[in-house]
Length: 392
Image 1 (tube, rainbow, N blue to C red):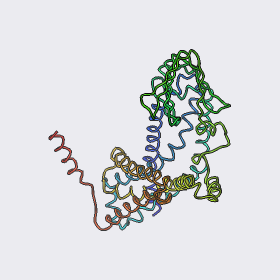
Image 2 (image 1 turned 90 degrees about the horizontal axis):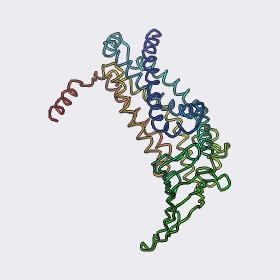
Image 3 (image 1 turned 45 degrees about the horizontal axis):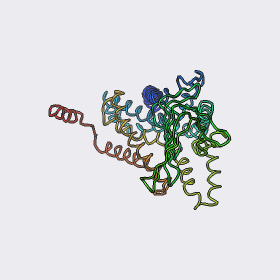
Image 4 (image 1 turned 180 degrees about the vertical axis):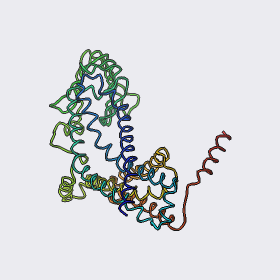
């Protein structure tokens, strides 16, 4: 028993760490493509750029660990099934429960570690990332702007600049749309300008030169006012985006430990009707920390019968299955989060539904395996693809 337990664990270790590293690498590569243009060449030291990306590792690890468990179980049991080791073990009287025990125990340990990781390390790194980003925006406000790209980050405003100098915060060919007035839509254009952070008003200060202000009536489309200026200053308040970020003591729900969120929930529950949406957000985050961690156990439960059915131990097949199942899992999780925050379903149901669904599927496949050997018909699948290819 102990020899079999250790043997299966050894089969799981290599594909788990390989897939974990590969998944994190893919996440990081995607992040680099998205954000490198915003941080590189902005006059920031390399240590700050490195820290900027390093602090994103926490959420990547939190997502990569459950997916790595699924890849590892699929690869290990797929290889054992392809080499007829599963058949030999069953012929020797080894039942499904004994085969399941090593991955389930390992996944349970990983789930416990991941809960602690999400409770302590993830909130800390999320907080440090937000503070770092806030500091960068205050010292380099043009970090928010990308040349030739419209910026929609502040509600009610749209910014555009054809040229952006991150070192001097100077702009060229500036356009500022203001839609906050219910009666007037304001469009400000200028040949050049300077963008600064306004710590007093908590927002941005635009100093624009050689431009004009156009005001179009929303109630009377034919009414339009135009004013030219040589030099003008415009303040754009952004308290919801900047005020909280300037206070390093303030934390969002993603930056809180479980105990901090429970304490916040108790305070909000004193007036549940007024704080309904906030309460839903905190309960979603609390349940999500647990559900993503427990997904390690669920994916181990699902990966074992799928690997035996696949009868192929390559990482390519395992990764393909894992991507499909994890995408479905993540769609359920994100959709549930949105529905819970809108009040359509309870946060507990929304966050735990994917785990229940996949656990039920895993138990069903295990039950079917005990009654009759199930395999994936690769030959039929290949014929279908060949027919479609020849038809195309």
